[in-house]
Image (cartoon, rainbow, N blue to C red; front, side, top):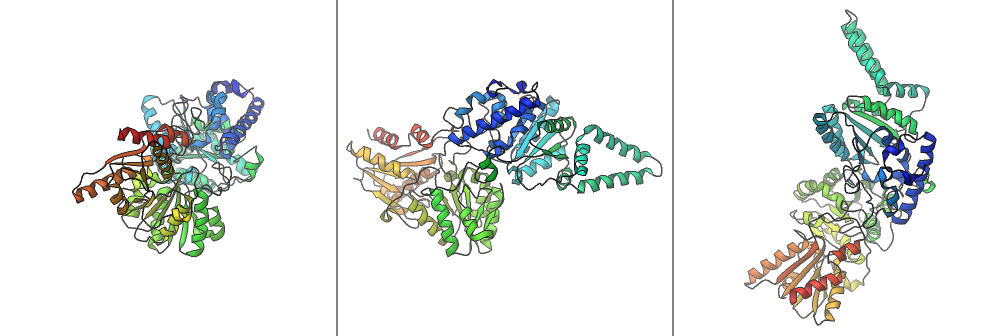
Length: 613
């Protein structure tokens, strides 16, 4: 059976298990080849191969709904739903997305890269199907850390309370649920997984209750016996207390066993959890041995990157300031906190995929005298904006938000572009937002942030390459820095990494007789009065940022220029705000996306010329 002959799940159902085992080997080879050349999530997908095959043999997608949480474990699902021949285009512009994508296939119901959401989707879909088509099944495959997020438990609670027919597949590829192997446990698994036996057990309890004199005693005895059995299974007790029947754990690499378990689960007229044990990185030695490295497509943080500088500075600050603690939401590796953890142990706190909890917990730490640094991707911090605003901002808590992957990130697509952070954070009263334009600026900003104790501080930096500059090209505190002096007619203000594009645009314009002033604002908020006083004298001010142009850094600068001009009784300069449009941008290389948006040197220069003509 050849992988590329699979046009959809129906092609799997008439195949022998021997053929399926061979297919699984082909799938793993294809994943390793694709991820090795184009990046992506390796370990989680290698571990879910047999599980995905079993799911598509038992359930009939897309009539039955299969939801993936987190979405980065859906590579095998893509291949089995008619996209194997296109898999070489994974994470390339115009090719397959690295996450489920509704535009790619009707088998992809949700476009989710943010974890812990599928159970809420499942509850909603099951509610809708209850009145429209009760035969449709809803399956939520939850794994790779998604169960550490609070939203997952909110979804579980509502599913259990509603009693609706949802199959929750707990893809357990960690070590938190260790199987107890013995003949007794194997027998219990088979007993609990068989819907006929369980229905007979329930009927027996009902009959026992009606037996005169001894019925009540017999029923209590049966329930106590079943409760005692449940105590052997911590997972069972947890889920069943929430109202979900628990089945498992099962070997996640045994297709036949998985099919039996899933088919049984589909027969229950109530929500069911099927607990599956899988091995992350299965079939690829390096991934099996180093699961951290292959969890989120990262290894050691590269030197010469913003993340590398942050990593080094955290170790330095940790040594200088014993009150400094680091917080991560399940990403100590890719945010660069592993060296800090190695040096300072329990001063590095991993809260799991729980950004809201991370923020409010950081506020508590700050209230108690610690200096918390929360390292988080821009796209994930937006999940916790309410906590940033009302728990942190309202209390003026000196939490330092270290925001990686800010701006256009590229290959991971619309859910990962970090284009909201400046829009959101600049609306938090008292929030200082800093945007370094070089490695040395990030170094200085982290040193300064420790001393900014009057409220929260956010430092945002991109995933893309960082430049290094001399010390005379580095500012300090909240002061902006003039990077280039012009004739006073044109001022370019480049936020963070966009400073370099503005400087390059100024060189292009100089060749055409336009002499531009260039400013590095450094602080998005508060806006530097010195920069505003200089720019307000120009005819044209162009601000450039790699975040949303509506309500972002440029908007704040424009408002400051207007206020300054009105206070001085003079006309305000024309202001052109350049940034990312209000849209969901597909995946692609960051530099190309920026160029397409007119946010490279050529695009900035073209905008200036059109304004000055």
